[in-house]
Amino acid sequence: MNYSASADKVVYEEEPAAAAALLNGPDYSPYGLKRAPAPNGPVTPVQAAAFDPLCWRRLGTFTTMPTRMFTGPGVSGGGGGVVFLHERVSPAGHHRLVCVCYAPAANTFSASFIEGFDYAAFVSPPATWTTPFVPTQLSPPYDVISGLPRVPPLVRMYAGQPDPADPAHFTIRYQMWGQEDTLDGQLKDDDQVTLTPRDLPKMPIR
Image 1 (tube, rainbow, N blue to C red):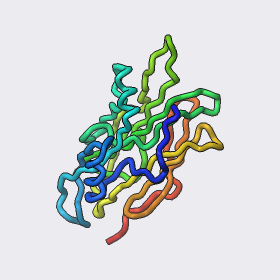
Image 2 (cartoon, rainbow, N blue to C red; image 1 turned 180 degrees about the horizontal axis):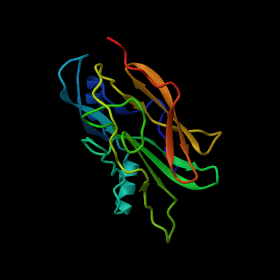
Image 3 (cartoon, rainbow, N blue to C red; image 1 turned 30 degrees about the horizontal axis):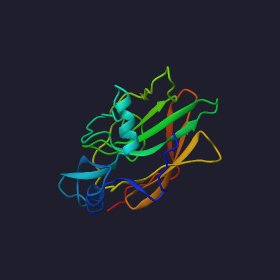
Image 4 (tube, helix red, strand yellow; image 1 turned 90 degrees about the vertical axis):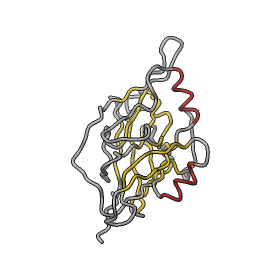
């Protein structure tokens, strides 16, 4: 509930050299994708680096429901990167552990952030002596109309940060096509979690 990570910590990386460096360290797993390494180049398998903190993995041993169960269309290589993990409180005062995983489809790509397609949110009330920890993924996985971009997006996500001024709000800094933006995350009273880009990056025209 009190997990924290530096706002500069990379928790998902697609740039090949940077991803390879992260995969040499602890708590990162390879995340398989198919991308064109150069504009309009041939589509080839690549490995992104996805962060999976030890505390979240340990927490998963206390439940029969996997803590990284997101398996959206075309996803390969696990549940993606844990991009936000912390307690949030909904406007009605519901205390929840919120974990957001970024897991883009392996064989296609959309710059939009759509729950059940390229990110999953796990939400759980705090456990008690009589109520176990049960992470719930509310949106079922589904597909959307999309394709591979002509220019590789080289997505980079940084560790999300809770908003000290708004207990339901959090932010996640990220990059696509070298353009930086911020996602505004929000915990709703129905336990849904939304991610809203402030200025969604656009694929360059080449």
